[in-house]
Image 1 (cartoon, rainbow, N blue to C red):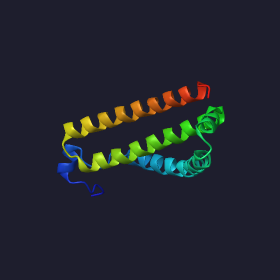
Image 2: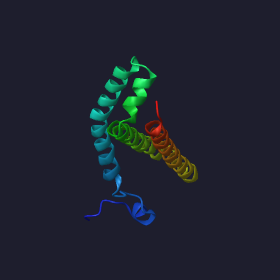
Image 3: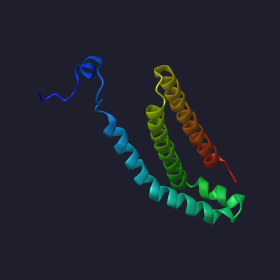
Image 4: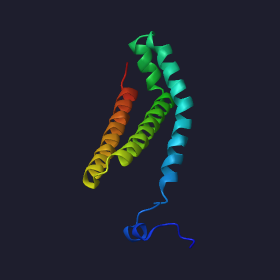
Length: 128
């Protein structure tokens, strides 16, 4: 009598998937990483906002700055993906619709992340 699952749940395989803690932990870690990265990004962006376009491009051309901007945006995309994925998995119950939305979400995050990297490379290599 140690098994608390009903026979129906045992037959259908319903129960814990034993994989939810990884996504939960990843979302918490990305949130912690975003706190200093976005604080730096927003403050630096605000400081360079009134300096003009050339000063902004010079700031973005620095490889360290470009790396941290890419890191902040990449972690933000991944954090957002994890959050939207949880919402989709919790509230879309039809199997095919859930699968289609999750695949579309993955491709959207990949395309936006690659576009982000492309734009940063173009801005970094461009002369002001």
